[in-house]
Length: 178
Image (cartoon, rainbow, N blue to C red; front, side, top):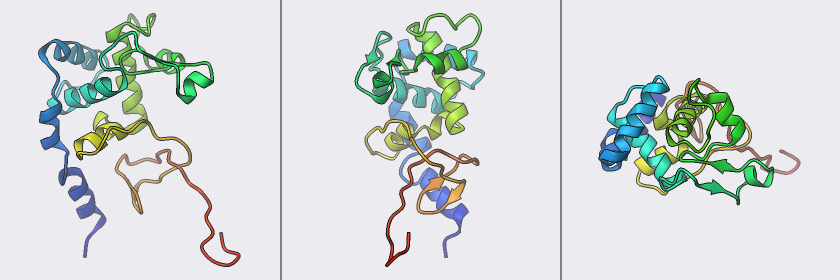
């Protein structure tokens, strides 16, 4: 018999987690910037947090502080994702800190806002969907959207301890039943 806690522990440590972080640690030039941004965001500069930020930035912008995504839903709505962590202007404004809140393309400012957003949204940097995927050996994935995934283990796992956005559809499971 597997308990929910046992399943959570297996998922967290089984195919990724702390062991996977070592392969994603930033290079020396990126580490200094990450550590500074983590400190200014009020987050510990641990190897796991450094690796998580490195994964996000590497996949979202390829470490290009001038990167602008003109092809996603944000861009279609007139709010393109920008900078190292690909924040939109409203997210940047909401999560930037004083002194680092005027230039979305400033690497440190963008990273601070992105870190603070990720923690507010997912509970930790390790819980960002793309980081979870890479740490399990899967391809990087973008952000979640739609619906709510409640805490606990169901057909999906939500380890954040709070409701998490997810996608839900009504499907027919039998005659006249939805």
